[in-house]
Length: 267
Image 1 (cartoon, rainbow, N blue to C red):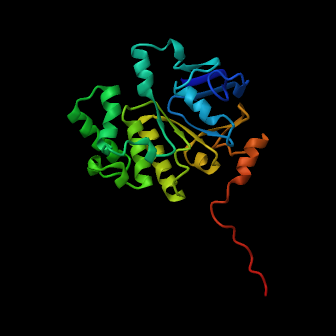
Image 2 (image 1 turned 135 degrees about the vertical axis):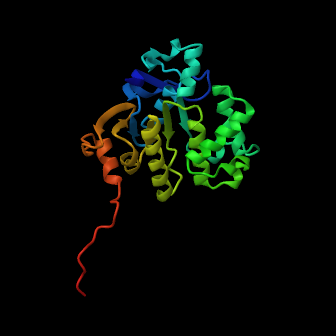
Image 3 (image 1 turned 180 degrees about the vertical axis):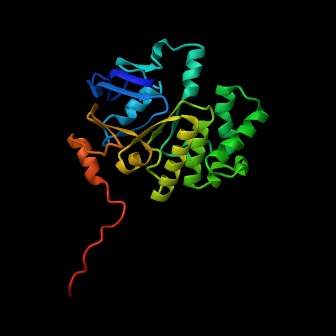
């Protein structure tokens, strides 16, 4: 079943002030894209290809200038009332810069409780209990609810960000370059954790990145964007063989997982 879809999306921005007469710079051009229930999708593309713009539209943070975003078959402008609350609970995001995503003056427990209070309507006590459970779910100690963000490492904060996204039991979590600031060991640990969550809860994931190796670790389907269009799609299990130049360039940029053994050179 279709969870979220973009249908013939066109979108752009005007440089300068609101009253600027500069022409609109088109970022997305009649783009079609979808995510099914419980699916893990990788969205690849070089910087400027339109990946982050598409993410903002899918999250409802911006309205497309052309086309429509549909949540479970209903166009977002028509999603109101309780259905709108359901959408906000169902689609969450993990940000790239984890330290800036948290208020440094409030504890981790307070940050995790915010979506629980506003989206789930839980009491203060229930929020704290749920916050402790969320920390344990992402492999952190429940006692971290009383720590400030500055007392945690970058990898720990990124896990807290994932815990906050999981708080409302969403159907989809969007990760927009959310792992790019972490070292490879932490990236693999978090991706394996997300795979376990998807298997256990049926949560769908959209991993937006330029790193093909991360997509291969988590995703089942890969889409490649180039200059505001969806250039190519393929299944991971079928073997990644990109024909479009944008996908092929990203594939060539991935280093081998292990060094290649070479024959000793005679001296």
